[in-house]
Image (spheres, rainbow, N blue to C red):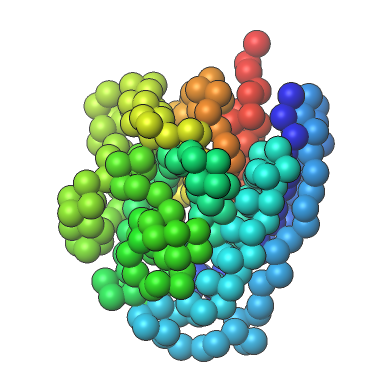
Length: 302
């Protein structure tokens, strides 16, 4: 039995496409708390992190990144709440919102482990690598930058929420990647980040890929944080995401990935991000997000 603390981050400042701020509400509407409790877990809902409206946040690009100051403030709050949950023996479940929130959640988890002499591994399940910096980004959208900042690159205040870096490149496993900018390809090679693309999954299967990714992220680390962007799944199964890309994981492949994470026994916390109800069909993507979360927390077929 696990005590799970839900932290909602209704933020869409990191993207130009509106609606993803309603993701935490849609996932809660799909009864995530009650269904986790039926698995035997204790669930505390910590409510939502306050997020300013775009109209109240600073406008325009800030050093190449829109709303960077406001996003950094939100991520600082997310980091504090995530660390507090872990310090209290809870397992954080962070509901987004756009993926920029992970610069906070993972920084908080890394700071918690660092205070005990440990180190965090990260499995990043996403169609995108999110490895741009304000200098390399063509869009200025910060949801394409959180992992670069966790690795200590980019804007110093956002990169320094835990320490710089919050995580080491060799402790990160990119899984399901299929849509990269040229700069991100360069960063993967330059920073030597272990990566398993959709081609690798096609060729070798999810089981082999996740076994290697978990082993890689577990090497010399204390625990794993999984950051699940629903766009890692094919839009046929998850239509309501911030940045859909064809050719993603199937329904069962995504479940198997989560089941293998649960089997590892190393999960320190989980982000579930980029659910966009405005683009969804009858809350299908939020429902899938709940089902995948249940798999990550131990639900089995038999």
